Image 1 (cartoon, helix red, strand yellow):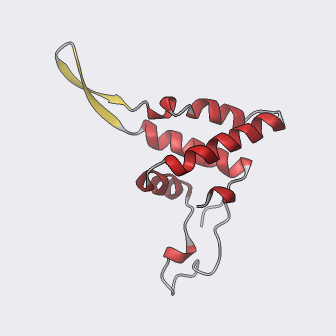
Image 2: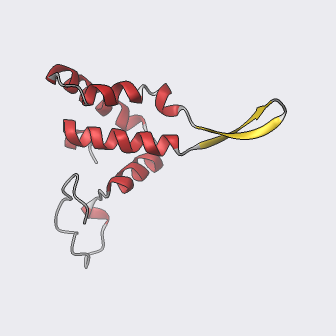
Length: 114
């Protein structure tokens, strides 16, 4: 998905999905001599909670700022992370589909599952 394709609503959906993808990551850490798995904190480092809060704001100016922040963040993510986010949302790129796939001739509707 290109950054120009994001609206405030689709950016919010993608940001929430990104938050889930990043929170699902686990890291090994030693605590008091024992190895434990801890959840990833990359979402906080990327200021994702602030972006989500802005996208959910009642003020249009705040939502637009959140959209700008998310559009700046999106290209910096790895291809694998972007794919996981879009896959979580059920979005797809029609050019990646086989010719016989009935979805190959239309764009997905954000927010709707097939």
